Length: 286
Image (tube, rainbow, N blue to C red):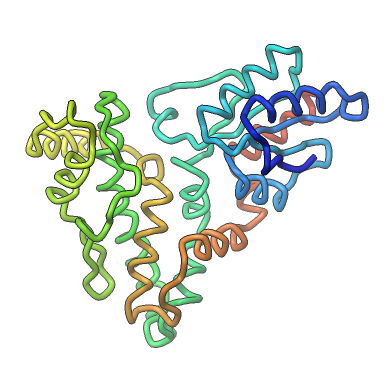
């Protein structure tokens, strides 16, 4: 069962899934709905069992949750979804039949699994990664990227908790991010200004100083970095850093970096995750 890339609407996709699951040939199958095409590729690469089918409405997290609810309401109890946790896990939010990634999203789960270390060692200048320099250099780069992504994530967490309506889509990172040799520097005030300016007018009453204080308050709660950092932010900051003389290959596209990370992920590491355990448990349930 392949993803319906040319589907006219989400309703068409749902109708097809209903017919598929009612087909007698699929009576022992388990449908796992994921957010997009790249997720299908990932789970097929690290597949657990041929009984599990992966597909997607290719519309995002809310659509996955809605699709699983609709399909289950039609009597298909062997339907589940996998979504990015985002900040839901921190707030103990759950949905029937939905499993979350162990970290904030799938990309951060990969980073936590060590793929960024492989990326750095593969693409950094050899003079920076030779001999005893390798491990400290790699750890420094990784921690710098995590801290920068974390700072961006704090405002997003505030937005989630307070339903503030701030707009983070298509951020212009160059407006508030600078690179100095191997350091990624976030100008938090410029970042807050940037987000307020591009958010709906009704939210412009939010004060920059107030939001900055809220970020510091949330930081004092000491949440796990991998639960706060957004994978897209991390990958973009990594791209910015590796568009400098640090890298042996400049101007890599985000999708190239993302593909490298997914292919570098270790199957054994995936088997140690809670997400793997949850999916594996479906084989005994059905």
